[in-house]
Figure 1: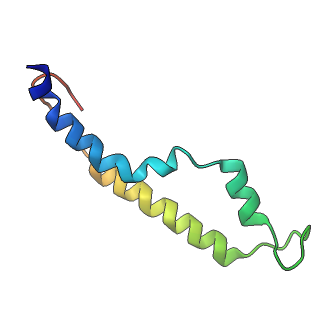
Figure 2: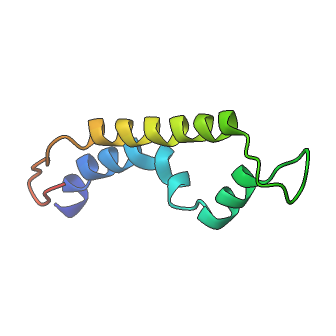
Figure 3: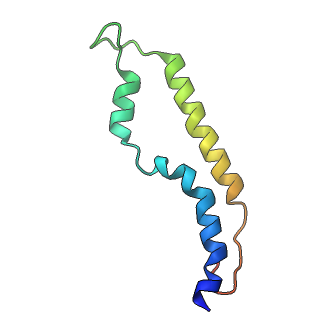
Length: 80
């Protein structure tokens, strides 16, 4: 009975697998890499286009997650 009722929650989990990388991001390394100036190391000048591009990627992922998570789903044994 249990195995029959975990199929749907596992399918829902699989939809979120592609966002697993968000959990494993080293935020400090990401910030350091975004603010590192390859042309002049140590310079405070930042490549704004690179930062804008990264923000778009994370914002897009957040929007996709929100669209997947609109409502709770009732299954016979679980509420997801």
